[in-house]
Image (tube, rainbow, N blue to C red; front, side, top):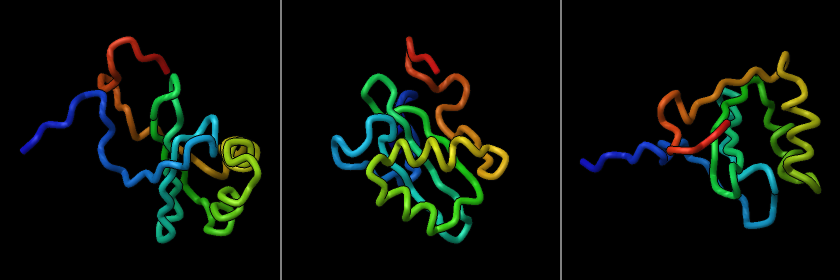
Length: 103
C-alpha cells in the first residue's frame, strides 16, 4: 500500500478546470445528492486548499460553470453568503501543509 505524501491532497474527486479558466479556483466537485460543492483553490499557482460548501443547489452550480468568471461568480454568489452556504476546510488539515505553506 502506497503512503500519501503529506502535501498531496486525498482524492476528493476534484475535476480541474482547463488552464486559464479561473485564476482563483483550480477545480471543483459537485455532490448533487448532498448539495455539497467541493472547491480547490490555487495557492502560489498550484492546487491548494479544498473547502466543502453546503446547501449549493444544482442550478447555482450550473450557473457558476457557465459564468464568464467562475471565480467571480463563486465569490459573489457563494462565498459572500456564508450564512447560507456554510463551509468547512477539508484539506489540508492541521499539520498536513507542506513546509513553508501559508493559508
